[in-house]
Length: 115
Length: 112
Image (cartoon, rainbow over all chains, first blue to last red; front, side, top):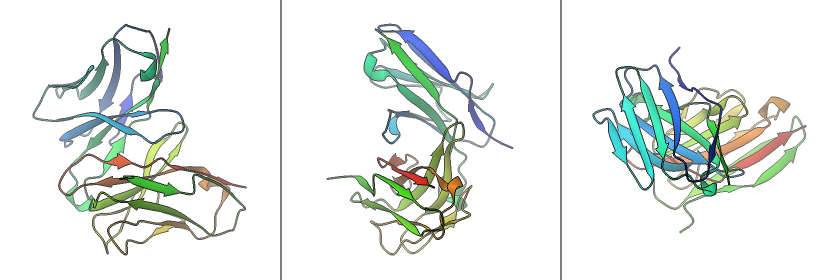
């Protein structure tokens, strides 16, 4: 079946380095993608999103890249800080209007920032 | 403004008992969702509601029911809890035609 997945379950980076978290999707009908950050004991927090008519979108210290050719999504975090340590989820919306814009989530990648 | 509140924060429940998890929002978002989060399985949709008065089934609806009597509240009921319903439950909301969902703090439920 169609799915959203992540390549790496755990990513360990040095403080100050850049982090790249990857996500593969297989639903070619998806037109919206979103990244969430989840800290321990908390709910997922919106980070950044991108529509399928874009290849790149930047936020504060974060950039999302979308490669529709290979169905790949990535989240780049610049100058990673200890506060960035969390689990990161990608999600896609396959624009199923009947289902009320439901999101399908990947399994998550844990980012660990070493001081 | 609280955003999305969930209650209780955590609960230990005996198998066979009935339990209602509460979700309340003050953002007047049309759509609301219930997810469960389990290790290795990510977030899975249980039920959703596009607007007050309507509900729909998600990926894993069995053993759960919901109601949406008004815009602000979306309770999730386990009629007869089973150990496999041990999980962390998240409520989420979405505004109108937007795609972004916003999540509550979650309820950790343990069924023994």
